[in-house]
Length: 257
Ligand SMILES: Nc1ncnc2c1ncn2[C@@H]1O[C@H](COP(=O)(O)OP(=O)(O)OP(=O)(O)O)[C@@H](O)[C@H]1O
Ligand SMILES: [Mg+2]
Image (tube, rainbow, N blue to C red):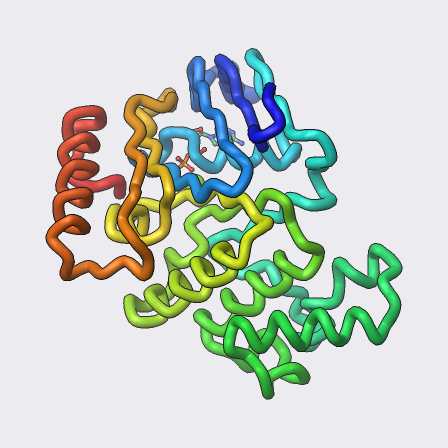
């Protein structure tokens, strides 16, 4: 694996077996390489193994076959946090103390923790809500806070599993922009799962299509559109159409839902 590679999955397979003896093949011979600094979007039909893949990358599950190679210094539970569709904030902590949690665990001095959290909360548009509790916020605000929480410990690889799937369209667009801005500051690689082609084209530097279950990568598109990306541009519509056609061809469905 060369020094520009952040993550390399080779011939990865995973089958779930129930106590009753039935089995479900979730992934079958999946290959995926993610370069340092890339923003890779995974898109594929429901049940094709996307969450399984992220869980394996995050070290929460293990493959039955194949290999997961991570860049030197990329450590599960340390610098590769996962943001999920449903917010994972601690309900008993204020926003500020949610964002500082990982830093507390690391023993970062209090003054540094507060400065880092204030900076991140400002970047995700939550200045003024430091002392609020998660239940006092909208779903979109909670997801902003979850992003700030994930970024507090300077992840090398940010894993995101449909993080904006539960918010309205306008909020989703705001969150997409906030995430792209943070990614463009540099130093971070993103592996992002979505069902939404529009989101994939807005965000990705590469879009990888998974087949229906058992999943493996069947097509990849490099997205070279300039940023900020405008949905009204002809090139955006062309890219959207190409991905949609590939999804229909590979999965039989016009979208990944
Ligand atoms: N713990 C488990 N035990 C048994 N089967 C499982 C388990 N987790 C996932 N599966 C099965 O494995 C397949 C892949 O699941 P996974 O959650 O990875 O899909 P997904 O692509 O994330 O789907 P979605 O788009 O709906 O989130 C599905 O058929 C699912 O039912
Ligand atoms: Mg999933």
